[in-house]
Length: 335
Image 1 (cartoon, rainbow, N blue to C red):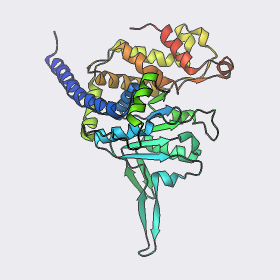
Image 2 (image 1 turned 180 degrees about the horizontal axis):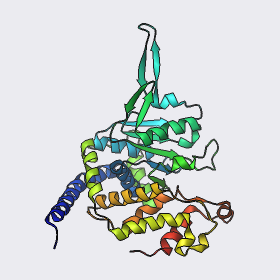
Image 3 (image 1 turned 45 degrees about the vertical axis):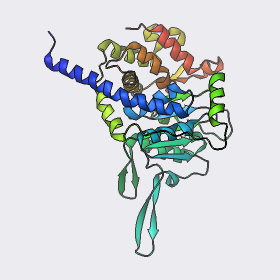
Image 4 (image 1 turned 180 degrees about the vertical axis):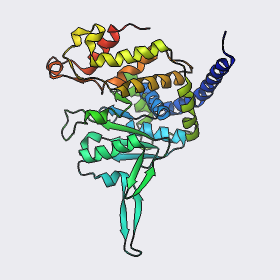
């Protein structure tokens, strides 16, 4: 016999999922008026906002990253700042500093550009380690300390950091501990022929007029987190997530001996948490009140690709972390 309280909670979740699916659909529609394609990226940004995570992008310039984040901020009526990372950037240029006022002998706080809801950190791997650490600390703690005062960052708060491929000159590799703070790492490729023709039609003018409407509020994004937390995930699916992450550390435990020696660093427990949150977020975006194993497969690569570090042996054989993750998904039994 079903517990009436449990049944009522389940009905509440289903109703709330439908309610939030309405504004999410509206945001997608507005973004589609400006940004051509990039549907997976749009969904990952929305999941990041709702799940309180951040997104790392790797790709070439000119793929509408700034346009996408700026347009998303307009759809949600929130603040957007773009930060161009350069080798001479200082932490104070990012988080702010204290400035001495000789008139009254007091220090005044000047807050940096990080005090916005949506941050585009462009070419993060061109900045030195101190600046990267300042940004990533703010991402993790969601606060900044200036002098003896601590200032909370606005909510919602999402950083979409972009990095150039490491083969390019003037780049600094992000340490594994800092990479682990990103919910997703996405590889952005060039658009298809059909999409590029549409981009040409929309943007091939000196004054492109691409306007969007505000269809949601920051309060709706924050309220969606309660719904995300309540989305049902079966115990077998939970175990599936744990097995996937554990297989990146000890593949032999899961009869994946062919991967022995190919993984230098496996995914941390933060990956287990992030796959769970991302899968719930994907279910919410698709209008479901429960998580399926397919949700795990859909988000798993984006959550794990920057957390599974290949060994020198794998690099010598040109085996990527993506290939290893695919082998893990193929080798584990789906519940």
